[in-house]
Image 1 (cartoon, rainbow, N blue to C red):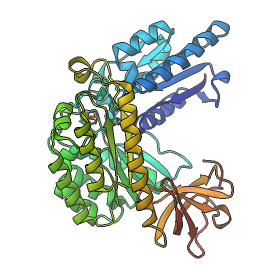
Image 2: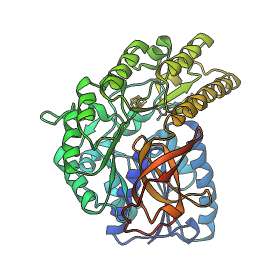
Image 3: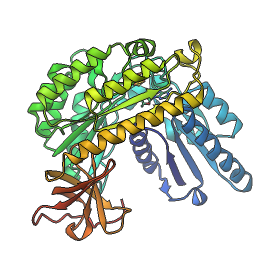
Image 4: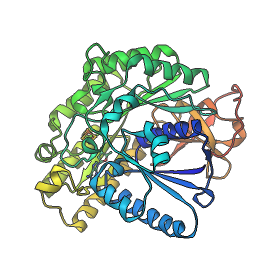
Length: 440
Ligand code: 5AD
Ligand code: SF4
């Protein structure tokens, strides 16, 4: 069956797309680049905010029209597929196959019987599944746990992905070893909350211990996401500091700088706790690159609360931030209990926050000018004459294509920086890569 997959949302969804692709390949699917050529179009959906849900609706609208003209099978997986909201959308748009995020391994059965699976108990099978190593890829994701045991009041993820289930450490290590053999030079360990890895299973290592084990496999770069401040232990800081493969980069969502808002979000920590974690991190890993997630306009957020977020930003001095306008998601506690703020107010605060982020990113990126970084070049950049990649701190870096023979790791000196990009030059002659330099 000619198949086309469209993926929305987070890195976990990207990883799940990789999983489902390998399942589909094993039952004979061929992959095509456009939905027009496909007999089966599968949408891997996101439900974390309203926008990605709207996007899925509009694509499904187009597919339903297409379906009236020809034989077409439509599938929906991912977080939206797990929700009542998604199941209604599926009925409306004549979706044939529906798979919740825990039921990916059931794709073959679901296609055969045109059925719908969203039972999270399938997740146990999923966590013990080892997908084949990706081919021709230098950077790869590895899921180490699924689901989340926190209950942030704005977040739909605990509903769609269920409680946390850690994958057995030996399977994780086996997957990473296979990746190393396949030429992968960077792994990103994935979970809704990687720091609490192992807590759900007696006898499993802690995340800090797992990180040390992953380091020993010997892939040059190890990164992880997402972290929760509550579970960011001193031992984890120590493990990062003593494991050379672990990159000097942490994504540590703060969501708000106001204790009042943090409490309403049920984030479980206060501003001071968060700042103390940042202090411990900076002490252990002085050159750490920090990014965060921030929600603006959470219900009840006052001007003073928002100013607390701005001042926290200055106190931490983030390298990068992902900033979101609060989106009321049906099924979350904050949707039920709190009233949404006016849109204009939320947009105005977002703009002020973006200004702050740009200033800091510019300042932080400038600090790298003249320094040498390790760039993982992935392919040709959209900017003419450049190859694009990213360094250990996750900064996007452009290098002149003339100095790059192909994808791979390069030492480069940063020459120039903007708030979004760094421009470098390859330092001296370097080993050629084995894969030709093509569009990433
Ligand atoms: N509205 C806005 N942003 C949200 N996030 C999660 N749920 C919501 C929501 N309802 C953001 C958080 C989280 C990131 C992945 O998405 O900042 O860290
Ligand atoms: Fe959602 Fe909070 Fe869990 Fe992150 S930690 S997935 S924001 S509930």
